[in-house]
Length: 157
Image (cartoon, rainbow, N blue to C red; front, side):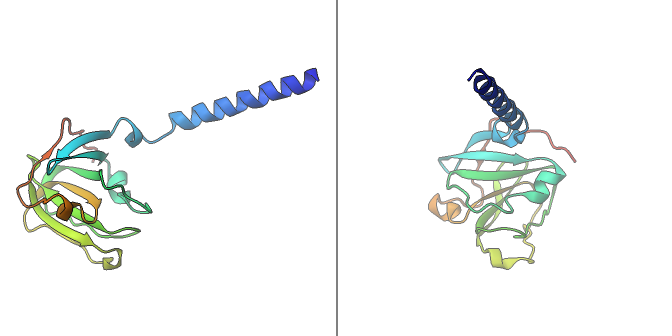
């Protein structure tokens, strides 16, 4: 009986260590890089893509994107950044924003079937925001709308 007690304590200890290790290795985007912004009069949870790896992965492989969620791709310089739907499982709205956070271009309801087409803005942008398809229509987002961010993280090229 005493042996079973020690075995149980050992198993609980192992589970706790595994849980702590898993918690410490969660991507930074789950807490540190997830902030709330205001866009078109609504709150939007923003996950930042600031590294080349994060920008390459983007929202690819996600089976669902919540209506109040967006991924903001942050670049060091203004340019005509192209976006495509590789590995996307759900349609998106894509917004290109200038360095002040104003929308300069929108492509709505981009279907997953459009890959390998690449979509570009007509003018340079600093940021690109992806949301669930229908966000622009539901919240009357148009050219000039401001994405209000409290903090914009630095970019890792």
